[in-house]
Amino acid sequence: MTQFRDPDLADRAYIAATAYHAIKRYFAHAEGLPVGYDFETRYRAYLGEALEAPNRKAFSLTTMRFFAGLRNGHTSFWDEELTQQTGPMPFRIRRIDNQWTVVRSRITHLHPGDVVTVVDGKPVDDWLEVVREHIGQSSLAALDWMTWLRPYLLPQRFTIGTDDGRQVPIDLTELPTEPERGPPLASEVETIRRTDRLVVIRIPSFDDPKHEEAAIAALRGVESARVILLDLRDNNGGSSPGGLLSAIMTKPYRGTLVSTPMTIAKSDASNSFNGSIPALPTTMMQSGPDVTLPFPDAWKGKMALLINGGSASACEDFAMRFKDGERGLVLGEPSFGSTGQPYFVNFTEFGMSFRVSTKREYFPDGRRFEGVGVTPDVSIPLTRNELKKGTDAQLELAAKMISAQ
Image (cartoon, rainbow, N blue to C red; front, side):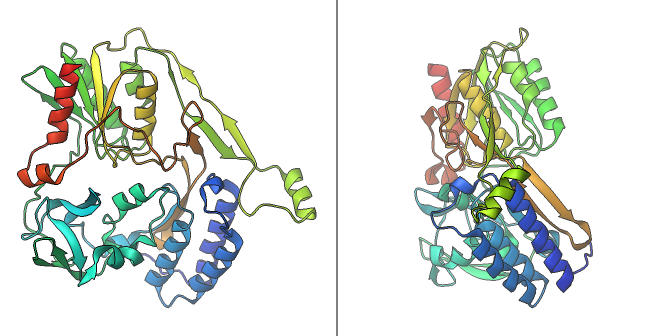
């Protein structure tokens, strides 16, 4: 476990001031904030709490709440020491049909398909209220997706109550010994050759160039396939995979319309003289949508995408372009709805960092993307029934729809 220095009072003030400067200069999502949001008032209240926080954890949680108030999935504060103090989350819970449902689990008496109704005797949404204050997202769907993913925001011990009356004690200090049950998460690119000549290529993320390279190699290895389904469920992005797009797109396709803050000193000076300088950036430069022409050697066979709420950021950039270029069906669930090319600041000696989203993207026709995401052509929601049975009905239904196309 890496040892970090706790920030003293001056360090806290420096971190807070650096955050203030970065948000004032680079934050691209002022239009997404609720009516009446007062950044200066919130910052001054945060600064008082941050300087008076009794310990490191309290300072970090206060800072997380301040960043979360900006309601953007690419704008957040991180404390590595907090993450090291807890192990990996031994279960995955997400909202399905408006019920908190266990998707994966390494807890003996907690099973995929179980519905969580109470925690420590309280209705689950009431119990989660404090947790959700620390997670900033552009939509309730994205907030729901992220709610159970940060164990350091939860108590070390609590009891989950399920809809069938069971009480399941959870101890996050214990490393689970059970194998994980539920839909598996891939860590590398996987190729599945099915008997119906459908080839599924699962791409877990784009955070390492090796994943994009492996996906392109997989495509070249299955060019005789009747149809290729790119499974991008739970792909949380990374770097936009332009090489993969070049390998598959057969028609011109548009990128996004991008808006990013501009700082013009003379304009700011004039506004300050008149007392009208905005608290957050409102002078924006827009670019796009750019148009990319297809490569002549791109693979021209039938394709489709399978996405869900965990398909985020650069993965959504890919899905948007795939859909705009009419490359094939997009199936599954709406994507996460956040991208942003963040401005990063690292405080290495403290093990702390933050990021501020520097661009707000829109669909090529100007429609809102942030907080909305890519909508599939055909909705295939995850169901409690398939979790209980241990099947992948989403994939099977997608395969059936592609075959019938």
